[in-house]
Amino acid sequence: MLTSVERLLFVRGVPIFQELRDDFLVRVASVMDELSFPANHTIVTQGEEGRSLYIIVSGLVRVHIGDASGEGSDRNGDGECDRNGSQRHRILADLNPGQCFGEMSLFDAEPRSASVTTRESCNCLVLTQLQLYDAIDETPGIAINIIRLLSRRIRELNHRLNTYQVKSPAPDFSRTN
Image (spheres, rainbow, N blue to C red):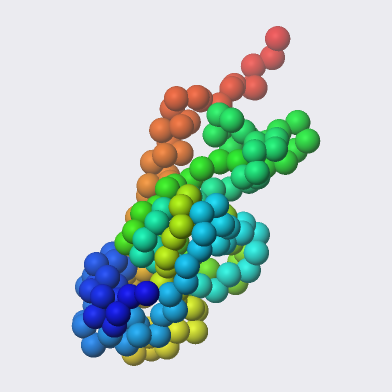
């Protein structure tokens, strides 16, 4: 478990909190819970409701969609469906200490868009939607930082998608034989 000072120093280094005042960081850091998870534990499950942001303090996690069990999963990681129409397993990202996940669930009521599973034992700080909204009322700048983080992730995904499409262009079905 982190001491109050260690928690403040750690939160200060997280990208979405970097530009915020120390008095705000002290408040946010003090209300976050610290949770521990064993290796191969699913912290967040795709499709379930979520209302929390997780910040990785130690350990590694994998963000993925589809079936992570390996049964009927996509060995190529192309995200296509199998013969039964089930979504195959696709890795979206591996996250390290100082990175966060679950931020979209803080702003909408939509189901989780991906699952997150620990790759090794992991400690996380957790900020709930209610805690965040209280913090935004006090310091609106945190909303801007989270919007920047979300925009950056969308740009990265767009780049990856564009790169994928260039490598394997869609077939042209407009031609007739």
